[in-house]
Image 1 (cartoon, rainbow over the protein chains, first blue to last red):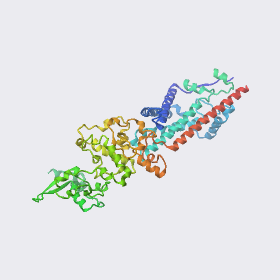
Image 2: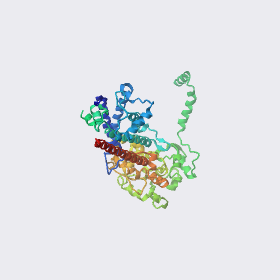
Image 3: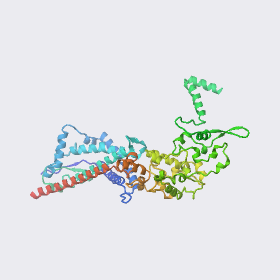
Image 4: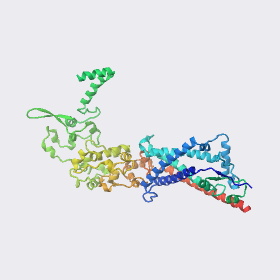
Length: 219
Length: 335
């Protein structure tokens, strides 16, 4: 009988960073949607309040992002984000196949979480895209909208502010999609609540090689 | 002495070109005394005669009895820049189309001072050609506005629409920024200039910047929105609102503009929206090209796309979760 392995993958500082980001992100999405779809008849959040909250949360998230970036560049957490192109396509499609088909057949995830590699290939690509492309695009355009005088006024007859705002909304839209899937993926752990527990307590519970899951949960 | 020292210094420093340029620059400054007429601008005989004095910074007054002459300053209010006038909406008019022919006598007789000024409605009221402008409604709206002459004596159409410079930017310009700048300069002509303000009313001039401190991105608002968009009541029959409201009735609610049914669609963007709608049939065409107001102009395609993708993602999650649940039940059922 193999015991379920517990790895301390999410230290306290990381969990705090993650939860702060999560709260800021929820504020940003809620106020963002409210501003974009503002209607005096159905005020989701009062416009001026939404603007202020969105600005404060956006600025705070930028600060948080740079803390992350420093961490990735100068500390050991950077290793989790390194993408090795060799065999990436195969491992990515393997992991994707598991999510789309294997998971329903009771197969085990083809990827094992370790201290060296905490993201599976699908997570690795998604997190890198979100953290190194979409989030920067969002806060760069967000800051530009905070100082609209810095934006080129006219781009081929279209308002520069409008285009910046459109890019900002599209990036925000991708982050919202990411959030939905991210929340759903919580339930895909060794048990339905295992991933949720990991991000709260810091310990990752590995899918056990033993097929008796109920025993694993008890432990 | 000082001048020779200065010249020597210039020579020493090698900036000899200054010696050539400086006199030219001084000559150019001194030549600014009179306005030179743009060669493209053409006026009739009578108008040119008037502009000889009224188009210049100074004019020569001749005493008809003694023949003595004196050089006089032409006061700003009586001075007309011929080049600006030629481009103004009424620039094709001769002076005496609106002013008394008595002005052709020099020096002008005192009687001309009693000449009543025409107001917009005097010419445009009965004119079918301008029915679209609804000058009668403009007149009514203006008369109940804070500028109406019940409130301020000596206020008239001309107080804002200088007949010698006025251009119908709201209908003629394609650029919203230009329309805003032109329109706001009319308001700020008095509300930003104590010398013009105090001629009309004995009241302390409000500081426009501190009064609008509450506006986020104040300078952007000032460049992109007209004063009247918040300070005047919109009337659907006229293009530009003329019922300027007391300050305490101005728009202060963000969502009045920042929403799909933005009041700006019926005011600042009215002309553009109507024009573009009739040309292209695309509802948001004008404002998506010219300006962006958070909450007011969403991109239709982006909205449809985002809602569809959101729906698909949620549906995919629901299907995935259901299938997982079924497979879990099946495997555990077997055991």
